[in-house]
Amino acid sequence: MEQSCVTPTAGRRERKKQRTRESLVDAAFRLFQEKGFEATTVEEIADAVDVSSRTFFRYFASKEDVVLTYQEEQFTTMLEELAARPKAEPVMTALRNAAVSVLRACEDGDYGFDPERFGCIQQMMESSPAVFGRSLEHGQKKQAEITRVIAERMDVDPTVDLRPHVAAGLSNCAFRSAFEVLASGMADTARFSEVLDKVFAVMEDGLNLRLAAETPCLMTDTVEEKKTPSR
Amino acid sequence: MEQSCVTPTAGRRERKKQRTRESLVDAAFRLFQEKGFEATTVEEIADAVDVSSRTFFRYFASKEDVVLTYQEEQFTTMLEELAARPKAEPVMTALRNAAVSVLRACEDGDYGFDPERFGCIQQMMESSPAVFGRSLEHGQKKQAEITRVIAERMDVDPTVDLRPHVAAGLSNCAFRSAFEVLASGMADTARFSEVLDKVFAVMEDGLNLRLAAETPCLMTDTVEEKKTPSR
DNA sequence: CAAAATCTGTCATGGGGTGACACATGTCGT
DNA sequence: ACGACATGTGTCACCCCATGACAGATTTTG
Image (tube, rainbow over all chains, first blue to last red; front, side):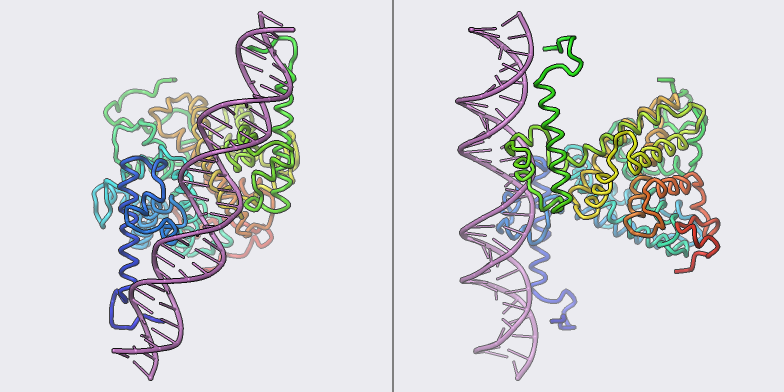
């Protein structure tokens, strides 16, 4: 039942499964990029790896799950980054640094993240509602874990204190706002990480939002002086 | 083509359509409450109103869409409430007041909102991932509209200034956090509106999050004095 | 009343997702 | 190395969601 304590990657069976899984992900992303997410059927993905559709669903609960694989890894490394931040750092700052760091890794290909795939996913998020929805769902689910970690960091009971919940929600919210801003094309950069950083900055200003047009935070650095026109 | 300028609810056809639509929604919610969302098939809903399944899909793009009907109305009235807030009010305060006001209406049955249905939806959000996902999706889509309204209110260009986007995101985030808190059972109340108000309060404190365990915001009013234990 | 527009049911189709069962392939004890 | 066992896979059958196409019914319009 238990692994035989000798082989580190225990068992040829396990290795085979791992290979199949990776092959499925690879094939899926290739096809998604070629013909788009919706236009790609599970059968095609399975055929490309020479397994049955039924087997596909033994590896992934849904077609969207393949895409979430990437997001899952992002989330995991974000938790690591977060744990690595000095305890002295304010919570929101730690979240901001961790989040930005992960996105930078995705963009630059660090930690084994594939930048091309990262771009592909962003495209699919915009074009395929199903992917978008599942991604939101996934993010919201994971938010609970972030809450736990933050509560620990704040040394506070998350079943009583609201703040960890809100902090986790804010980081999640920052991602989505950044994505939206990026998709809307209002940014002068294509780097998700940069936009995310700015979104966090606006949030940390926080009550900036209470004032009218004072200290605006523009996206376009190049036209710094330009006052925001009254629409 | 255009309405004949005489009948206010122009056309018997239009009225019939309206009736069918409402019947579908009614039947759907009844069945959802009886057997749950997943266990209810579109065919059953259609049969209950004596139309074909095909017709159902001419009224709703998906089964989840029926549920989103309610959310759509919430959103509409929230926009109205928002527009009704005095211009002098800070943005986040206006959002908070508008949002809380709408939820109160849902709980108390004002403005034609059905409290029972409101509860039913919350249940489904917890038990049916599909509903949950679509709801998130819908909220995110609507966030864009909120952004527009806020930008107008701030007299700022939303294609350049980040703040309206973030503010809209925050209000959306507040809803989700409140829902999560409510679902987790950590609140001493079942009133969504109250929890939402507290979440907004935490957000408006904002940099509260930077500090460790200072000025905690507890959910349980009854144990006000109790310090948050270190887990 | 006739013509045009629109709604509806029926039919066919396709893709996502799951349970059941038989078979094949890896794993483990001796 | 051999059998007993566990686990992964393919096939099959099935359900449900969703959509396009077409014909018939109903409403609107002139």
